[in-house]
Length: 344
Image (cartoon, rainbow, N blue to C red; front, side):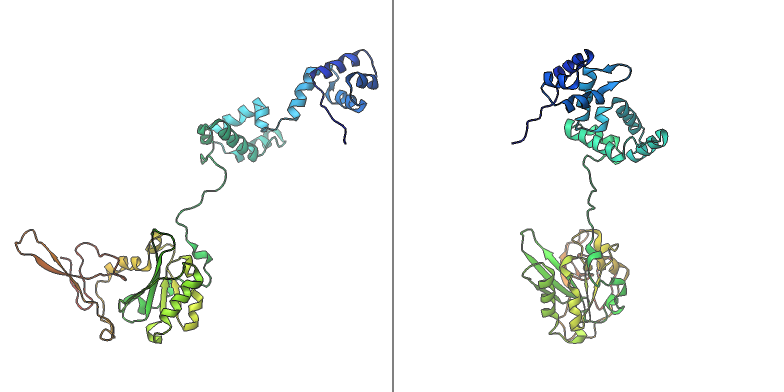
């Protein structure tokens, strides 16, 4: 078993001061205090000054200061007031630490010491006015996450929609698809949708999971049986469920992704078809599809609306003007694939 070590208290230091003033040796003082002679020697050398000699009260204060576990600003009132005054003048901790180093020539403290002091006061007092002394006024350390971030930078072999063929923009050629994964409030429910921009065919299936590997396998199983002319390109949003898109290149299907600054990415629920809703306003006229006879027709939906100025209801033809049927056109906008109609 090791020896038991006990710190000197104020009473022991008073005894050391009295015996040292009487001229006793270190061993005699150690025998009276019941400690080692080296302990008495170290105590006298550490706390003896030339002007006042050994003072028990000063030695006790120095011992507590050495064992202080708090911040440096908690121990020095003068230094703490200087820092708080400059923080009140909207100085940053980096500026305060740099100015003190330039004024004194010695590194009194680092900016990390000031940050720790402020956040220690927040945790101790629960007073959030301490956070206002910092430039950003943050109550917790660390960086805040940005909401609405896009994983576009982590998608391998990602190609921007700006490089998509012009045939996919004017909807004149079939075979240009858009895909999206629809999620629901209940966890585990998802529907994978495919939409052809020209024929307006909508394919929907339920993938086993929303992971990237089963999603791309589901896409390949839907598109691979089609002729090559009917599967040329496919466009996604920047969701991670399409991260394995490059596997579709084996069936000669080129993949594209929307830009992070495009209208598609204004919200997490935006799809490629939502972007076309905005772009279609400037392009109200569409050319008829050359394979319209072989594909299911998209006839206009007739909606009966009551006219306040007439006693009889008035019929108006309405058809969706965007990529998918789940996007409503603006009020007063009507358009057919074969004919162009103005507002009203």
